[in-house]
Image (tube, rainbow, N blue to C red; front, side, top):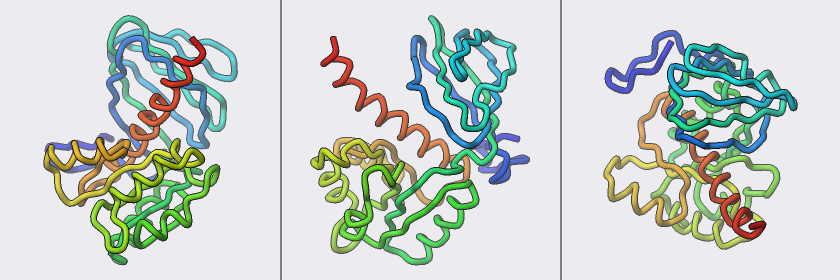
Length: 229
């Protein structure tokens, strides 16, 4: 049922049934959100609460709960300790709109098929210039962007996105064939919210997209929190 990064194998995972392990830091409160895929959580360690459609549910290690019924507004919060949780989702990217930026036609097609099998809606672009023309606020949930492309590479693309107030909030995940720490550092400094190396499996891709969206959400909420204080 789980993806094993050591063996590179998945046991029982399909695009319609997906499981991930998460470590949630203490005293983290998610922003209320909703998605069309249902999610069931099993908690191995820690305590916290989930608010689903305004109703609060307390949970602790050993609890199993339907924490995200399809399309119900919900959020989660951890208390004073780390939380280790198993999440099982039905099509974890269902309804997500992804702008896929990749100059190699065969790679772009393979990634498109993978993302659509996971439930996402995909718009393709062959370089950064095309991606800027197709990145529309309110229509794109997250961008998956290759770093090395002709005409306009991923670094220039993300730099221009971050300078545009209307689009700076959009999460962007870097795609690279290099797994070096230096490449990862450069991508984060350039403004990317996540980093995934090719080739990748379903579990790696989903985790990278979900983590990048959470990272961008926290980045956007930081200035607002300081302003309100």
